[in-house]
Image (cartoon, rainbow, N blue to C red; front, side, top):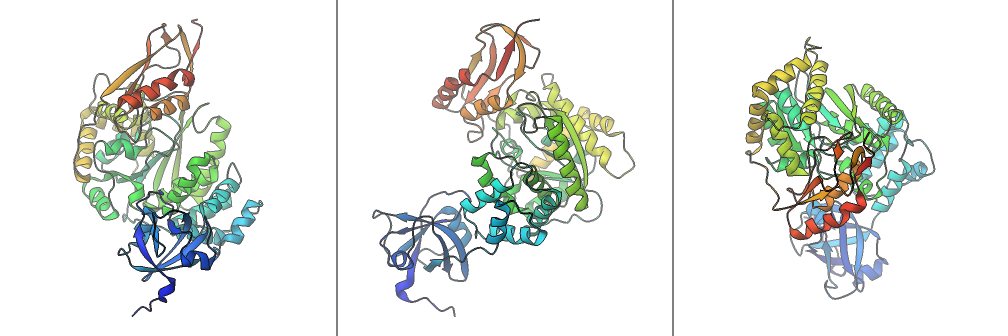
Length: 505
């Protein structure tokens, strides 16, 4: 029998009904006896004990009567982690300092951390022992090139250790990943369909959008369920050879999801953390051969050949240290891919390529074939050099489409992507030749139209660098699911100016 805390220290657990994303937060009244006796203040780190479960969370103090003096209210994240019965008694006290606090402080002051220190730090991340302020300090201290190769490998190992890890048995397990930053570059569904149709295993876990108008999981979700658990994911792969599921539901390298939550508002780039993020998830997913697509361009995530060289070297070093076969594919990141930017619009492009439609985006098709070929040539089956021919044959014959639809059915059923109810053209204010395209500006405009929260929202454009436009000609078409979202995006279209016009030669 579990001993109950004294009555004067108990608080009733209630549900606040507040979404704090992945950060556990609790709410107490400022005049609560426990709050006053413990000397709690706003942002204090507190430790809750509810039955046999324990949670470290951040305290927010309530000053009005919306919460009782005898209760502690939990945010959705805290409620999910504790899973309490409502009104269960809880004991709340100050949280002990995180064991990794010393290592974190050392990193902030420029010290190198070893594997053991990274394991302790990542374990504290998983157990919510570090506040978001402390996590932000770690992200900042790791930004740029502040993690060397050994530290990058140590962080990757630590992130693998705290999550699930899949084992698919003997034989190669293929995968691909794009470092991002290029709107519309939705090659993954096509690559998975081609590779799986040729009999290879390719269990693809993908992310939702972090700062972009659509992640692969967002695009797939308009066509089939993606929030599968590990058991369901395994069944799909065993049946069809491949899958495309949301990685956040299968807890492969879950510490990475927490760090991403903090990185998102900071918008800091760190090669070390990017490598640890990508490779920890690939290794945890059981992949043996991974192809990394690196679009390089002035408004892509990787902006120069020198930056690509540096990132590629770090990826190769860490992959080699962890026994992963890695391929690097450098591609043009100067302009968007396909026509649609946004979950449903990108899904329409994907389906056109798979269906060999006459109006399928040629650039998306060619990129998907090139990536499929490079990945197939990596497979250790003696067929190197034949990847492009094999990929093209599978796509042209309709076998890739059949495999894609079969994967969707195995994941829960296929549905056609929706179309937005409201559209409007953004026209050129002058004539000229397109000299450059701001990928970030296009992505920003698609998000202002509602993507990815509104799946059918975003924009379409078929213009590319070198094309000539006349004044009044449509540059792009905005898609929105409400008139208000459409008007909001239109207000920002002119200031963003994603197309740079030059003189006609």
